Length: 398
Ligand SMILES: Nc1nc2c(ncn2[C@@H]2O[C@H](COP(=O)(O)OP(=O)(O)O)[C@@H](O)[C@H]2O)c(=O)[nH]1
Ligand SMILES: [Mg+2]
Ligand SMILES: [Zn+2]
Image (cartoon, helix red, strand yellow):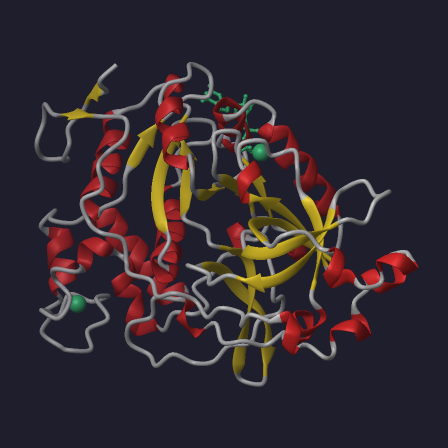
């Protein structure tokens, strides 16, 4: 079971490619996000005014604070119209229990906060960015269970959003000249980019593009080549080897034979992951192999929201039985490099790093061969010429 023989590099033959490669290049650094400030409840005169629970709780429960349970932490599974379903940490391995929470009134009004640290931008100055939703799927929160009975789910009140590590954000609307980010999922740890060996044939350009988006945001990223049961040829293994050289672990999987599934299950355990890939590559099948039933839950939501007009609000995360979460992010395919300036795109290809700054011209865009060290490296087969062309395409077409 130790992998299939392949050439680890297009020009050297005879190596073996384990199904999961070690990562060789550290992921781009990300900076912690701005946290929503804690709202201490004693300093909250406006709290009683707008809290919707006021209208639904019986008179004898009016003094909500007195009746709330002990404060505890959890993960927001989904956010819909002011309600947040929260899975408590101590039930992480029994995901059936979730609390339907409201946010404290003052928190809901605090819709604008700095999220400037969310992206690993290394050149441009950070700017203040407004966000559309203050609490999104994946957010870690502190909440207090409420004793309100007679509802389908136990209820609670979110008191604090804990600091985010990194968030999946996309451009939502433009507020004057300032792009406004819409956070789809908070605290996403990694993105697994899936393509398939056959039916459909591999789409390496798509993989390059998503990996570049991940680098821009600071997500860990992995590549998954699925449907290896349908045949893997030398050129695919050579491509896989280039990704490994660039620092991206590669998984060879089959949702039919089960090859590589155990490794995939290991890398999603205890983390918040999302699968990205075009239709038909086998994402749902992989989810089902990792955790039977999960694909059905994710699929039901995707279909329901796909028809609706509020698709973007419905990013959700699903608890995994073994710990960790899987994000269903309808917006993932539209993830664009909206937050990256042209001069930074070269930094999104980790294997270019040794050559950056060594071109003849300091402001070299690496698209012509006039003294360009990156282009020379591609011509000399030191980096992947195909990935280099993906860079050129990203740079010229956006
Ligand atoms: N031979 C083979 N077929 C697969 C594999 N994974 C998925 N499929 C098939 O590919 C098709 C698309 O799979 P699906 O999971 O719906 O892809 P998704 O659109 O990415 O979610 C289905 O007919 C699956 O049965 C695999 O590893 N090997
Ligand atoms: Mg699917
Ligand atoms: Zn150059």
